[in-house]
Length: 91
Picture 1 (tube, one colour):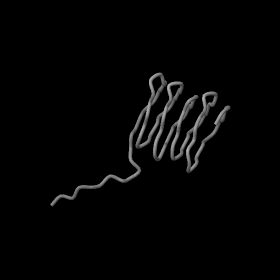
Picture 2 (cartoon, rainbow, N blue to C red):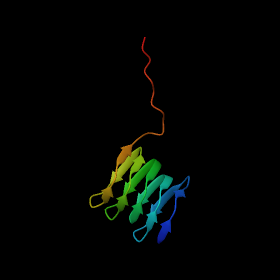
Picture 3 (spheres, one colour):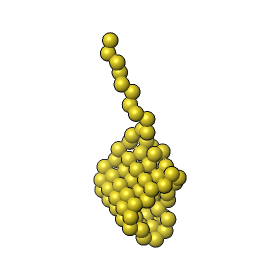
């Protein structure tokens, strides 16, 4: 995606915010790659990547997260699996 978007992105595939792209809203997808700017939450079911040129004002949550040197992040990082945690039974 190049250009400016205000609103939520929710897709079942991958999203790439290009170098000249900016998103004012949440991004939810299987994979999210940011080269430009996002102001909102990123929720990736498989992988999230912030390139060295990326700026994120918000949180990112994914099982696999790559934050390159030079990326700017003002928010929280949560690495979580799609699978529900297993409960231990006590005998």
